[in-house]
Length: 359
Image (tube, rainbow, N blue to C red; front, top):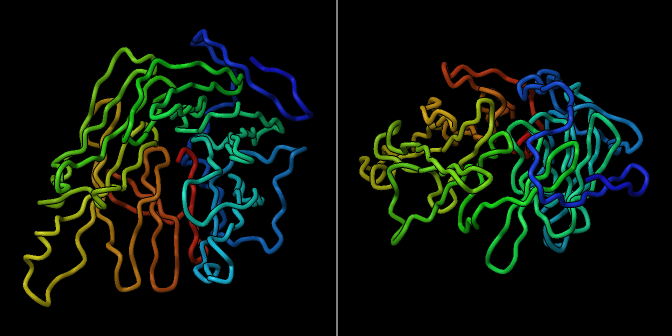
């Protein structure tokens, strides 16, 4: 329930009774639509305007920061805290504080760009960018995953070695404790319409033997029903495995909800190449539709090397988003999985780190 607080601030109280009803929200906006208004080149403002607290700014397209290696100096006495910028769907930019150059993000956008979650003073706050309301998440909760429809947040509360989960509905702000079991060593990948949680476990066993597929568990938020879908990690690049076996690059999201994994050739396949002929390993993104379990496609990436490359950074609607760099430019690129066709959304500053809606 909503409790009045300081001006412009709303506090939340837990409601133990689950309610399927939710308050009216603004008309849905596609993630692809949010990105169409980006300028042709994204340039940090020399004196950014702080995100106003007394007026709406409209839905956000992305967040970014500049991880310039020249800011990492011994004299600085540790990792620097760098400005982070919010870019609206209309291309306006605002400063939204400072964040660490590494580590977990402390600023997260909902998939529809309406809500900005910020961690300040060890507590999460949720700002409605289409209004001026800011709401405080009760202390002790951490944000785990946005729902794919942008109308709920999955929160986690750690007690000892276990974690309990709670759904926070928006814009009402009710907290509904869930019956999900603790999921140690599992990575959250998607929260489907606030009703199902998709996770994957990445422990590879003794000697880190590569697995032939990634199995994604999908559980009802009430803990009663479970199903699974799989991504074969050998299908596209022969003898392959998910890149970075210990911390694989796997992301979920989009509409319809999908999960995509980066797959590369195994080390033994690479070392078998004749001396002097070794090249960068082929890199392929392989996806699966979380609702149907059917393949979502595959995308061959440009492997890093010779001043060029592509990096998988997120999903927007049916498209896969990449950060692409060449000798002279860095670009945000959208890829159609059905055709592999790429389109440039905007040029980025050097060393830009992008945080997309729903990530």
